Length: 223
Image 1 (cartoon, rainbow, N blue to C red):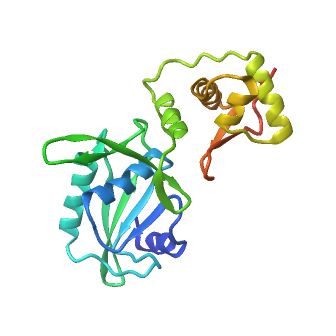
Image 2: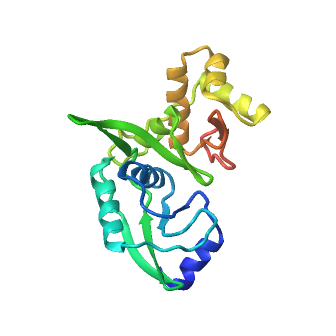
Image 3: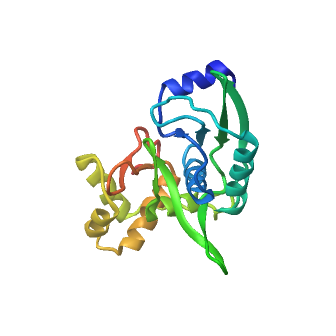
């Protein structure tokens, strides 16, 4: 990243694809940010920048880079590959970490104990924060992996009632769909996620409760 490009990114502030950190805090906290970007649309983690965009720089870029690589490889499952640059701006060094969106998501932050390691929490980006992913988001990430089973789409009575409801109301939650067609929440989620994979529905995670809407142009899938 060139110096003028970094200035532009910083001037736009934190958002769904950019996070500022004054300094490296702990591997677990950095892993959370890396994990969230990889599980969503990718983005940049900037070390040496305050929350208000003030450039403070880092004291030891070598140490920061080592800690970031440790977080990406040892505190995330499956491990992440990230791109790291050191950009000098205003006579200070800023560590620029680029995290591409991952085809192997979901990624978990690993919980470390004295005697064991286990998968902990899945995080995603929501606006300018890294938040815990919902069950719907985790399920969708699994279904979208390249090694997931082939998609089989069937449009039956449940799907038709769903489309009618969405045409009238605009959005629906898993619980609402389950009640609408009298099936379990688990089964309702399976149907909705399958339709998201088929690009008929869109999953929205920008509210306290995830909800689904129709895409603008579902093509020939609608009955």
